[in-house]
Structure formats: C-alpha cells, structure tokens
Length: 220
Image (cartoon, rainbow, N blue to C red; front, top):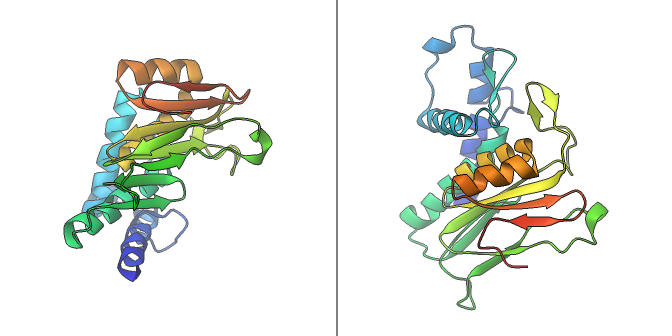
C-alpha cells in the first residue's frame, strides 16, 4: 500500500498545479521554457495531451494564459496507468482495480472470478437517473463532469455550458480516457457522440435531463 501511495505522490509532485514546488508549477514560472528540462513523465503527459488536442480539434487543450499549461484533466489518468504498471510489472499482481477520484483501471477478474463492475457516478441532484454499470478487465474508464466544481472545465478561457451532466470514456489507457472524457464533455452530447462513433471510442453520455446515451459495450 505504501509503495502505491509513494508512486501516486511522485506523479502528483510532477503534475499538480496546486503545488507551488511541483515540476509543472516550476515550468510555468520559468522564463525560458525551451531550456527547462522536463521529466520523462511530464514529457509523456504533454505529448499525449497534444495528440488528443489535435484529434479533437482543440476540444482538449492544456494551454492557458499564453504558454502556461495545466494537465489536471489528464494527470489522474496518467497516475492510474503508472500505478497499474507498477502493480503488474514490478509486483507481478495479475488482478486488481485502481481508482483515483473516479478514474478507474482494472486488470484480470475480481475475487469472485468475474469481471470488475463499476458504476458511473450520479450526483444527488440527479438521483432519479439510473446510471450505467460498466464491466472492466484490462481496460479503464474516466468520467468528466462539473457537478463537483462548476465551471472548472473551460474552453478558450470560458466555462462550458451544454446539455451534459457527464461524459465517460472506456479505453485501455486511462490517461487517454481521462483526456477524451474532458474533450467529449466540451463538445456536448451531439458532437461528442458523433466524434466517438467516428473514432470507434466507447463512450457514455449522461445528459442534464437524465437521458443516457451509449456508443457501445455498457450495461444498464
């Protein structure tokens, strides 16, 4: 347990925008960013972020205030991936589920020999909505929504106002799922659903009116 916590703290010390001494905070304060020596981890996070930005036509973008960056919308997913790599490759554990704030990745089967089943969070304001349950094995799920922190998801510096309560993406890479869930939330249900279908991405959209839209592979 302590080893897993240490790995999480290591990634948090790299990617947290809330810590003044984190690597990303020092990068953002740097006057000569081209000369700043990025760690392997932050380099990977930025590279994947740019890939998702390009593929979603800018719906996902870590840049703000000129050349500063905020990787909060992908860092938890990246941490989940790294912890799962550690559990599988270093500790040789062949069945587990890792959950960091709703970003979830599972390997193998649970103690009953069945696939891991997770429920998509439904806030109390929408308790009447029957949220989907998703079976996971050797894949992950990430969800993006604004029910905890209104207006924390922004596009071009402005808050997002659309018809979505949340968007979830199922993908082997939790970092990718994390970023794409944010991008699809920014797009809204219609454009997000069209993008997910075009790119064959497993996605689940829960609209503010309680409607649940799924691309494939989820169970109610």
